[in-house]
Length: 418
Ligand SMILES: *[C@@H]1O[C@H](CO)[C@@H](O)[C@H](O)[C@H]1NC(C)=O
Image 1 (cartoon, rainbow, N blue to C red):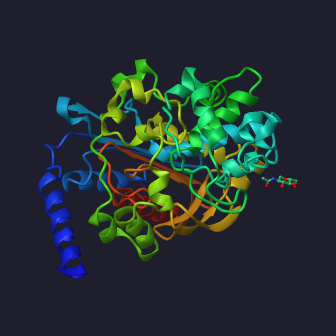
Image 2: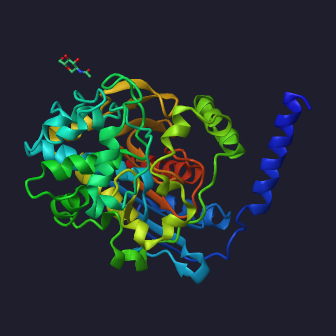
Image 3: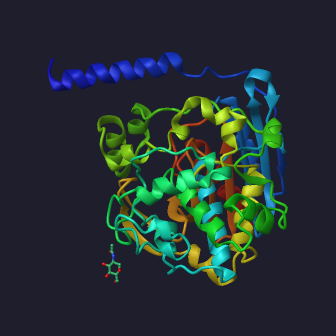
């Protein structure tokens, strides 16, 4: 059998697999809509997407000039028990959690607890092994620490009471690229590194998740957690199965994603594949709905929130109320544009925040696996947060459900401005 035939057979097998295992549309549940006058188009679009079976469990929150103009929840938080998504429902943000982690570190920098140019060894001397002694706080924040793939596993839950077990993995690790120069998305290790920094620098020795709760979430009344406390599980969604890299990725992807898609499907030893190896926890299907594992206070990808609190957070950041107006302005602008070794694409980035275009407009923020999104349009002072427990393959602010809702928002916004 020739190479082309093998590919055809493989293609057919994967397509057949997805056809037969795909989730059938669920009985429609209610959509609860809160919109300000003039923004109704978003609610109509949301209902259309539910009716088409595109949305089975989701929430979107949109703020304009700080005010929540749209808050919609619909579908099931847990379909098996017919538990509907409501305004108190929390759901996993995946990598949108990363901007919460980065913002905590920027918050500490503004309090003069540390500076961007500080070397990590200043507060974590054991880190300075294997050529890592010059790594700075800025390198970690900007994905230039070259620790996106690891030789050893760790359990992110250990960050709570056994952080030494996590620290030693990073201490022993050799950097996988040129520190401070190469850029590679720290998909699964970003949160652990930031947590270790925060705990070692905070005068009270608090973890990132604790610092976030006490200094940012509680004072601003945010319903957001980095790591889900046991007692909050009753209102968290049950997450559906994560789609694997598949032909959907090819079907959907613009030319710039093809290298990534190819790497995910057909290589075993690329930066992309290696970056997804450890910690293993995040690729064990059982773990995501397990209250024990959900506790991991890991800002890589284990934050839980309502969409409403996510948009509130970014809106407060944007208006200079969590960070200074100067810092808020800085993170909304590109710090650099570079080829990302893991994402296999040239991307613009500031400290913790990606700058991208969605529906032809300039946004900054962070997407998460499965379609989760948290982005701001600074020019128009709009913030968008989207969560879904029915994950798709889209993880770059390009989830079609989200994009449709963004477009509907601008339809409202443009007619409203007139
Ligand atoms: C760290 O910086 C010092 C001073 O610039 C330099 O001499 C040393 O070689 C650097 N170490 C590494 C591993 O790059």
